[in-house]
Length: 454
Image 1: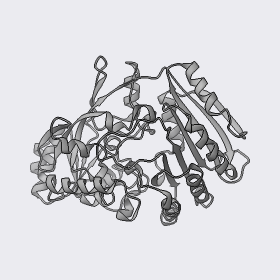
Image 2: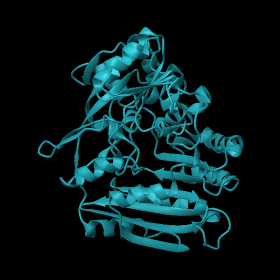
Image 3: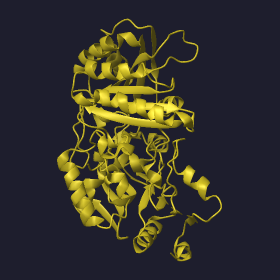
């Protein structure tokens, strides 16, 4: 394998398994403090789309599998589970056309940078809830972001993608050209059979006011809170996001066991509308232990709140669910799991979508329900890995009988085909067929596809 030849062809750089610093470079590929056991033989730090194409062709010629790495945020570490990792970190171009309300976005542009740049033009996009996550995996998996009820699932605001295919070709895919590739790019997740080097997005008018309010309750009231939320959200507009967070109390709070926080965020045309929406939502809410807000929460504040709950460097496991069951049923099952969480850092989020929420468009993204939930196991000691992951999986398994499937962006892909499905049977079958056609040799990390196209 003539790696020197590849080095000469790249504008970026190449790290091989024989180079100093290879081990550290492999660990740096994954945001999670829990690093995959497998180490890539080659790491290509691409400087441009042509570098990506060169690397893919070299991999094909030498029988290597490939994983693209955007930000390495997926908890399963899929960004490092191949012979060659193509790091897209330098592909971070961002060009905004405020008159047309469009943007061309590199895969490494983070949610935080995206929202900050758009705000300068009074524009917005349903960016993800974690500011440090880049657009790459977020959009490829669908994109359940801020205000997605009113603006829609983010991948359906993608008008075109620039893609390096498994044979090294660079093409543009949209509804008008290479439509099958474009269909898959909207939600395939790790089952996608190409590497996206740029997204072309439609943008939204920025909200004039973003306000949040939090009501805090003891866990024993979880079913009562869920019943109230079910009724309140039945009449709620699409621009309000209500999440029930189940987590241990903050340090210094004299309460034993987890708490339930009813967190409502509204994206409105002005302060009066925002306050009125929150007032209606909480009008019949049960009396709370504590009420926080309403308070202004622009995107940078929302990002900081997420970062506080999920700091980098800890060990993580995550799984998710979609359900059309009654909210109290889902919350009760997850709440029971949270009472046995072996780590006080672990948390669960359950979000109920408004009946007025924008329906998904046409694409591989095909699993969705009125309820979205995610459970995060968060811990520090590597010796606890098995126990923490066993707890996570038992908690999701307890809810599985009333679930439709999982969200590919936050699915426990380490389970392979043993977990909740991330695509409908029809979408999964189509993804398998397309992968066979466009990547017949399985170059693009076929092991990462096991659950995504099961």
